[in-house]
Length: 534
Image (cartoon, rainbow, N blue to C red; front, side):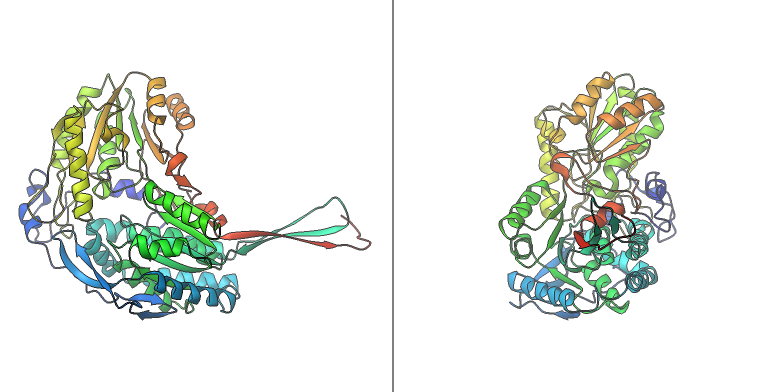
């Protein structure tokens, strides 16, 4: 995840600091008052984009669902309908898998040179860059994330990820290994076949890139199911893939619901590999369906309850900003969000005072306005779930120091919320809220915070803020998580593997490890007669 050179620190540099830029009307964003501009929330701006594709993409063509059914995709700024989208179900999944199977067994994609595959991936990246702002506007409209975030960070990241995997396409190779006898032994790395992929709604196009990129680089074909909340951007960019020269049937996109389309894909007997990003609860269902069908291998990137540890030697102003970014980025809708902020008791009171001030200053409003840091939550269900957790925090005895309710009266906006005096046994400290709710917990020493940080069913990520190298080294090894960010957070590079321990998933995405998800290993042994050497 990053733009241009998928700038490892670009995401943090661009988004961690407060955004005080000119608004689209030329007014300074400093006029934003406590949490939001009411007008920005009550009167949504007309998006500078139109919906061009709302059908299913099967075998290189946009088609209606077999049932003829559609469902509405909604604007989270208002709850109003953006477009009616084709509702795929089991019959449509079967049509898509049939197309993908034919494209793999008979089509040119796995048979063309790896270099030509890389050229198509690079042409796709060129088209992404050409249509950057239009794609970003579609993503913001359907998802609610700030347009600046989408246009300046996420869409460039999409292009960069595709170039990364384009670079890998012609560097995937096998081995010749010695044997204890007169045999020639080859180890081949082959494409696995038809890959089923299910992506979430919080980062639709980045998750698209994490899955589609390595699968195509390895020579596979794909059936991808979008999240029902955010189907539009994946359909748009998949059309660009066709323009880039991707053969028909190689990439098929189904919009629909989890219990119908998702379940059909997970349990399909002719899908060779499955990748899923979403909640741990749904991940268990996906894994079971895959096992009960043809025992297809599954990559899972699931939930998290990541600790953000602030040591007593930290620069508190920097620590406050980093912890704020770690939690509130993307409306708090991040699987790796630093949702348990552990603060050393010596700096606890100072940290709380400054964290509250920063949250109050956070700019909430229409995500199409420059300077807005926080848009609406994805939909009414998530909006209500977050408010339920806030109520639970109050009832369990945590101290609500700011926020705690909706912002405005229209759409799914929630005030940036902070709880202090949070205890490990509270729901807000144990369960994934997936919203703009920061829980701050006090700790006394290093051993205590290690034990408490690891006492969770999740193990996706962690953040550490300290000036002590020995403390950092101790924590990076002791924390049972897939990613540890030291004095930074949410640094994503195409080459950095991402995934979790425990119930945060299995397997890794991005980097060289992601290629292994989409390759089979075959050993070929041939006898040698009178070899000159072994």
